[in-house]
Image: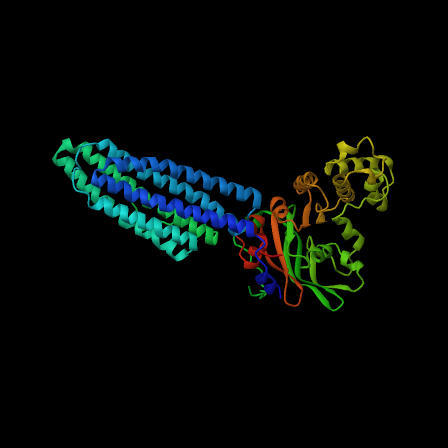
Length: 232
Length: 276
């Protein structure tokens, strides 16, 4: 009897639900911006396109602004709607994830800054693994955010394991670049630049793991660190 | 949503407060009937000593019936009878040799609408002690003062103790009723929507008062206001009616868990405001 009442009436939490839906959309939009920034930063580095690198840096301000806008909307929803249980966990997770995305945006900006610092200097070596790392990180981010929106716990549990792939690519880049330095110490500066780029990309996928943890928390209330098997 | 009623109550393992607090009141397989109608079914609940326990749930789910069974107020309804047990400090309050008057002294009650007697502030508070035979003026003075201090009303009324209790504001009247309940030195205080007729500031004042009182008393509160239950209580019991319209307890846990990660879908729907 009560079931029927519930189904025929619009939700009594319509206002809160609309606010949450808007926040989900905002978060996805922010995520897609960050995804583009990561790929764009590495691409403009690879092409040695300094104009594009500068654009990446400019766009980062927009990312920061969007993150603050999300933060403010979450605060307003908490203050005015007094969400509980799943609603509350979801809003707390959106707040946290928007912060993660902003930091991931900073990594893209960091890569673009390195690109600008390199000016006319040629790349030490053709970029092979670094673009793969960027692709992988952006892809993991995309799927992690989709899992968050769909509250897909299985996907959220699986993605952090892929972090190992990025970690081993990073180790590979590291080995290669240190070999360059050992052979010819004058390459230190150019090798270091690329090492920092790879390091930033490695951090991107670490933060994807945090998003997955938030997805599990939002869906289940369970707060636990997902540890990738291959430590270090 | 399917309305299948699990009899088993979900209790979470990380019941941390459980280990520290003693059990003041325990119900076992408690059912309450009004005539043939079974208003409550198989309530099993442990109320922790000197903690605040909130009972929440949609209208008509039996919250007040449960609250009233804790001090045998249901006895006043001729058709009501009780099955199962309610123990206060291990003693069955529905037992044969139990003095109901003494039970109601040990388990006091504060109602939804402030209901001071049409008497002076002093006489309102002294009413219970006088009923129990206390006559000496200075003894009564002491009880009135300490009760009014405990209910955080003393400073506002100490110069007008002989004015009518009815002359006070709604929030003050409710604190007077709390003082009246405290004057007979109860161990448990039952509160049935104690702030629902009050303005927001008076409400918060009552809630703060409850926190203070919980240092000395066990408090059980029935409330429709979920934010209030979340703010004020240590434990929360969620009740709902089953297909026979009988009230059951579907989840009982620490308040923190009930409002952040309830185990039962129906509790989730209720605390997030999806129904009720």
